[in-house]
Image 1: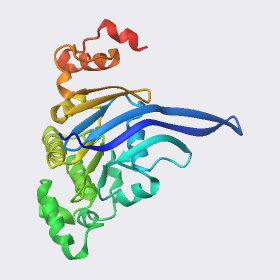
Image 2: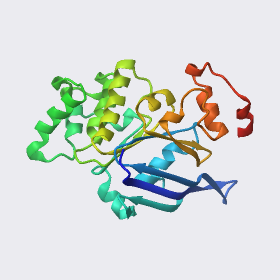
Image 3: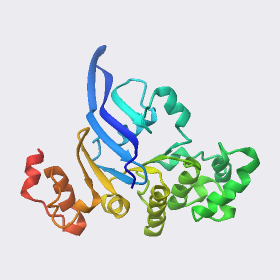
Image 4: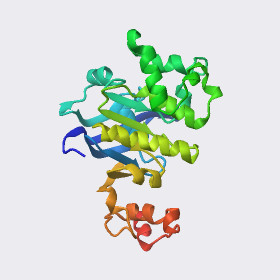
Length: 269
C-alpha cells in the first residue's frame, strides 16, 4: 500500500428533500460529516449495517445521486478536486464502478457485446477474449445471454464490463452476495489483484469475513458517519485493538467469534 492518496472525502453530507403531507417538505440526512481516505495499492473495506450510508457514499463519489439529493463537503481525486465535470470524464475510465445488482446487465444483449462496449473497435475482439480468460470464463460464453449464466458468472461479467485498463479507483458495491464459494474466491482474488497492480479499491460489503481476508484497512459506518478506520490486523482476538464499541460489537458477533455479544454493545444505543 502506497502513502499516495487516490480519493479523499472530507465532511461529506448527503441530504434529501421529500414531500410529506401534501406540499410540506422534510429534509432527511442519511450521511452527515463523513470522512474517508483511500490510498493507492490498497483494498479499503467499508462495512456497516443496512442504511448506514455505504452505497450512498459510492454514489456521491461517482456523481450518480438522485436529483433531489443535496450534497456538501469536499472530494479530491489524485490531489485535485473531484468536480461534477471531472467525475463524468473519469467515470468508466480511471474510476470504475462494479454495481451491486447483476440487473445492470442488458438481458437482451449477449454478454460478449456488453463487454465490448466502450472498447476501441480495432482491439475490441482481442480485449474481449483476454477479459473472458482473465475472469475465468469460456470463450463461448460471449454468445450467451445473462439469463443463461450463473450468478457467479454474471458477477465476473460485471467486472469485465466495468473495469478497464488503466483504472486507478475501483468501487465495488456488494460484489459477493449469493454466490458459491469458488466464485466468491475468484471475485475476492480479482479485487485484491486490482490493488496489487496499484489501484485503490473501495469494497462496500456486509460480508465482514470476506472483506477482512483481502483488505488492508477497514472503515466502519454507522448512521452516516465513519466511526472508525483501522488496519485489518486490528480485527483479531476479542477486538482489543478496536476503539469504538460498535466496531467491537460487529467483530464479536461474527460466527467465528461464536456470535458473542459483550457489554459494550449497550453503549451503541
